[in-house]
Length: 347
Ligand code: 5GP
Ligand code: MN
Image (cartoon, rainbow, N blue to C red):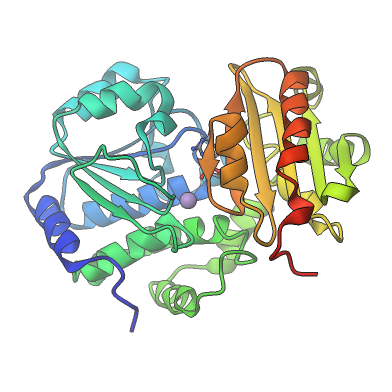
């Protein structure tokens, strides 16, 4: 038995939307990760199995190649490429599912069209402090992935039979990527009850792991070597590590979206390091990624200094300015927000 965490009245309301709706749009956040794509496609396959003929998934911008193998990935509409078409779908939708984000700002250029759309919006998410922009808000930060929320949502509607193998594959992918292949936020027994149900649906979990984590281009490994050898700065007295990459360096290594995914986690394998930051020049801003082990709150750090947010152990933000300025802000922030003073860090 899986605990019923979503309140029954929310399930009943959502079920009515699913039953009565004809045109569905599923949206997720900018720079979509495995959980954004996995939860969206999981729900997409489920709605298709409910014989809904007009179901679209829209994300603000493109996503890494190592998620493109997922069933249904080819049908995902990239908002920045097909803006007019996507705007029309949003405008005409009866129901819009907002997955894996907690405020309109997280869909960047799609935010205005999303908020202006007349259809019923349903938020299903696991980030803290959801903004009030949906008719129905199903938000559970204690759950480690939105994909797991989608599993629970489908089961609770009594429609587990309509979860196809494709849906199960996408749901598993999101659960796996948001927990670093079940190495963090993954100690709740029910996660494994759910995985066992997904395996019974016919997923190949070992193949899913290989499809995501063992298909990197050579250039990514070269960049990884360069980053570790030349670009990782340690602040031992702060138990902190920082990696930076400029636009020039990204070009030099033929950078493609997703090539630096996971870099921010690497310094956490150094004994004593409990906080790691990766600051990278992006097209329009400097992107900050933060990770911690133990109780250091990356989300508070991100919201205080970089207009961002996220989870305690994984968060991010942006800085509009130069890379070296962002680094300066980061180093100054460490003076007041010192990770080595976090009480609950396990020795
Ligand atoms: P990543 O470092 O992988 O880009 O992001 C890790 C997590 O931090 C994401 O799942 C998301 O919850 C959060 N996050 C990343 N960037 C931002 C941001 O700019 N704003 C907010 N609110 N959250 C972010
Ligand atoms: Mn997520």
